[in-house]
Image (cartoon, rainbow, N blue to C red; front, side):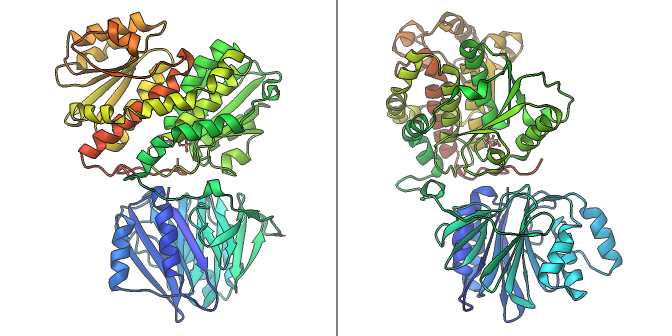
Length: 587
Ligand code: M6R
């Protein structure tokens, strides 16, 4: 949700190309607009463009910028339309600011600043920060003093970086509820994620909430939320945080789908689920959003069946705004790819404030905010996920959750070892799945059906299709269809059914018959023995046989491929679907 970068060079060496390379890595966080600002001969020079980063690059070719210190931004619009005028960096007279987050009290700040004669030229909340800094610099404060003062005035969530025309060697930055890393190498850099600066930095400091930094003359000075100087420990940037590009693949999403066997293998290998997290636990509360929420829904089936612990799964953005009762001995589990989703983070804080519950996180991004506030962390070893539609992180989440559920069931623990190779077999079917895409790509709407733990997979399949192809899609519990959704079925609507030959097969098969009596575009994902018993007038993809408890993991994969190929046929931008951003750090 917006990506920010800042680079303070040495000897006035031009840093513009490095900023652009960093923005390329951050584009997954937002692509409504992009911009860059540098200090050039005592002036702030900026260039911004609406839409994807490519538009900014094209503009830069005709209007080259050069500067030894600079900031850049990729925007996911919150306050103000995605216009060039609202694109960051946002400048006051001699200050330029990039911001990720929301300044909640910007209206009051704006009112005050207007009284002081500041003219607002954008619809953004960020403009208040730029003018506040300008006002304090005009009052004679140094960038450090001005920044400290402004941090005391703004409320909300932010990662901010600022540069100053009169202080060409200074860059200020702060973090509160939006991620920001400070990198060290030849340059001192700022980045919303480590990938964006890993090409030029070897070590990193993750700012904690409330911390801020002054980068002056190539040196970084850190301060805590009370503005006391601190000396955070630098960490080496590890390889698994680095985005290594798309490789041979046309899209990150396809690469990430194909990486699932190895992501699953690594996740199984690196996670040993000890018994300590269940000490005194009589209830589990799962908090998550989007795809991660669907992983939580699958976990509920597993946890109640194998751990025999009652489990609630809650949409994080809803949970914190009702008055939920957290019973004694509850273990809260947050599931999150990014580890930054503000809804999930806030829901966890609600749990912290209102109970003594322990908190565990299943997260993909190491050192992310949610992993840092949790008592236990299980990292999915999916590697960096760039495609906005989550794929390998989802199946890796399921692997962790299955590991938790099955940990005392030796047979299932052994079966785990077969999962990566069976997923490889499922991926081998990608041409068959590609062949299905024309059956869906012209539809206005699609229905996904599943039962048991495959019901959340139906929801996830529908979400994938919606997100990247913009076809309206809904997932239903197959048995629920007759209670209403069946009215939607006609010859045109594709009905995608998940029907392995398991203990629920007969039930799902009769739901399929009911759908077939009303429509003719029925697509079934099943296995060999199931396929022989299912109606011949349907289209079937025969998936490898797998132990029934692992079907949610393996059946997710063909649905990802299906959404991918449908989106391709519709000419959609698969990795950067409209209106979305990878990490959602606003409520
Ligand atoms: O990073 P998180 O797992 O917390 O993100 C939650 C959702 O925003 C995310 O899963 C979203 O639904 C994805 N776009 C799904 O593909």
